[in-house]
Image (cartoon, rainbow, N blue to C red):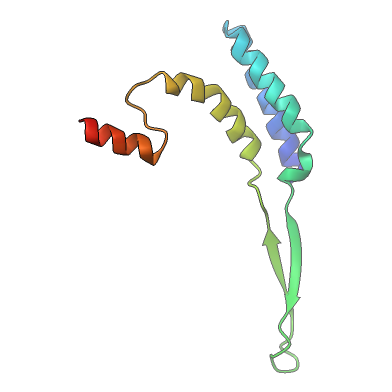
Length: 110
């Protein structure tokens, strides 16, 4: 998973360079900044592997059961970057609702 995380961070840096090459300097700097921040959070992208053994089974049928446990998805850092970039843009669009309260108000005012 750590290799996957590094590949994602490298992809973010390539994306930042591409944005800057296209003339979106500010967005490129922001993506690079977020990628740098995410690089420090390698531990948050890791998962845990645990095991249990069911002792109530008959002798000979007792085997360990592996449990994959993860608090965050390996792509959560990329989602955070995309959210930070798109959120200010989407907030300028009057037809986009960001909460159930926004939807309620839009329906009442329609």
